[in-house]
Image (cartoon, rainbow, N blue to C red; front, side):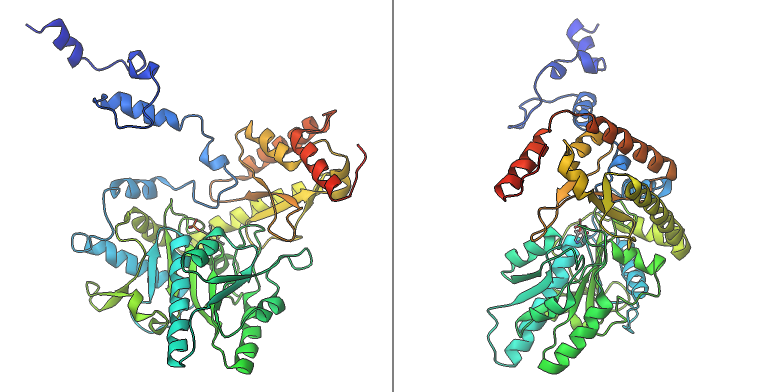
Length: 471
Ligand SMILES: *Cc1c(COP(=O)(O)O)cnc(C)c1O
């Protein structure tokens, strides 16, 4: 005979009738006692319950849609640690194959069977590795010349992604930034070259600038650098931060020369989890040749049938993304990537066009380099509106859209813009819903009789600068 207590314990807990559901969730100490798995699961799951649908998040560049097979492969390999190569040697082989495919997609001239590159958690790790390699190469050169190595610097535009700030802080490298201006919405090459000297470890142009969606002109930079290096005797190279562009240009703009076809481009990084179409986190970095990867950064491994180098900041990392990337390469092929990204581009152009036609907005650029764009409020409209783009961001959130408003980098920080990133998972129908929601939100905001708090703050800032608008 079971006691009443035993029967009660054996019964599946009634989740929402449980004690845990009427108590605050643990937030400081590991609870002393156990919680049934079904209740613990529900509690964790519900933490994410009020979040928006990932595919309505037009702020992120990172993959929010994968097909069933890709998702299945990732779920099935969720327990695999990439670094355990003796246990999972085929993961390392797949990783090497992915590096080969990425390197060849960027026209690597390297003749070895296994190209020189590395996998990372994202572009951040990949940028770090590219940056460290450039720094170590510069150190070697300076040492050989008997010159001091205490003042390295790096040159890029103020539209850098935050990883470069981290890189420069962590390795104590001086960051020299070329301001973005309205006349020069991408890297001003003349100014960039003007900032270079014997201590410059590399210049970092961006393919797919996070702030604007545009591409720096890497071919022109390479030509300018060729002239400058010849004149000065320096060897300043280029690392391309192609977090988005690395997986867009080869498909949508294959004739554009921005990669290893250029003389001074010695390394390129990209995010497999952006337009490589893999769920986070995955990044790739490739060097033009083995000789550009300093020996002390690479650790030899021989399981690929040859000695190849393994490089990374992390040791353990999930393998699932590598399987998914390899799956995407096989399944989609060049053709599939081209189709998906062309669709994203067409939908982005459609939104760009529709937003540009609205009386209150102006697009930042006439055409699109990548399937993302920014826009701002027309100055004459800005003068009389009782709202700002920050209010529009809030309003769109009410229909589930995440469309970020932000101020531009240093030098044009007075400018507030709004950005839409189109990725796989956004259809023309969804774009129509978005445009309709923007129109409705603007109509509502235009009815406001008094300035919103963000508008009041903007007015106050304007007044302090001596420009007074009548309201
Ligand atoms: C996203 C991005 C990064 C950082 O990449 P993660 O993959 O998120 O680590 C670096 N640079 C640029 C230009 C980016 O767009």
